[in-house]
Image 1 (cartoon, rainbow, N blue to C red):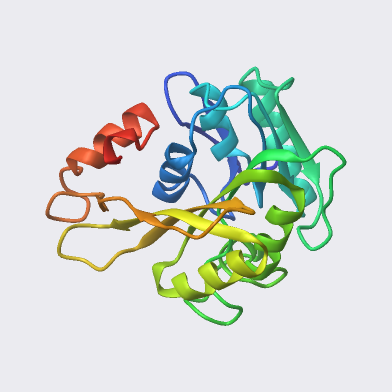
Image 2: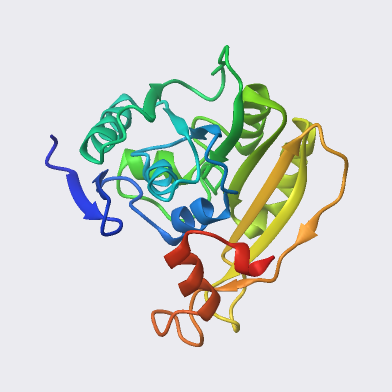
Length: 246
């Protein structure tokens, strides 16, 4: 195992290896996993899966049956495989070394989960590593590519779950509709009630009619960043479900 790989406890049941040169477990990943509707029969695909932490959380909470974790970085697929074995999910979690630009599957998925890069190439802060750059910026694939891939591998009526930068909400919605994925639910996430939103969660259904439901917002902290967690966020993180918002 590379010296850049460190283990982090996600819960009492799960410990995950993660490459410290790239993105590690974040609020985004926890909320995206909570956003996915529970269906223990579902076979899903996590696009841009990295070390597979979102899939690990979904499996640990019994929200899905099994998952393929697609990433175009071979070393991250190796980390995801290690996580699957270490946490007893080697029969339910399959890393796939592939590119969203051309990934296809003979057996379509019930759902797709995706936490894509938020920034256009050259935008945002300069990063310290190639891995971090690939995770944060559209250097190899843009939101349109992730949406097209999600639509290509989904069953008719299947659901795609995305988390994204609120400042690029229009780009996300345009990409989803262009790919035949109709936005159905959205949640804006705020650091505190006094801040602008920092995250947008969107579910879209393949081949569905128009009609978008907006759930009440999630506040990560009650008043001060790093202070007391917001009541809804604390409950969502513990239950790994957004049902309290419905």
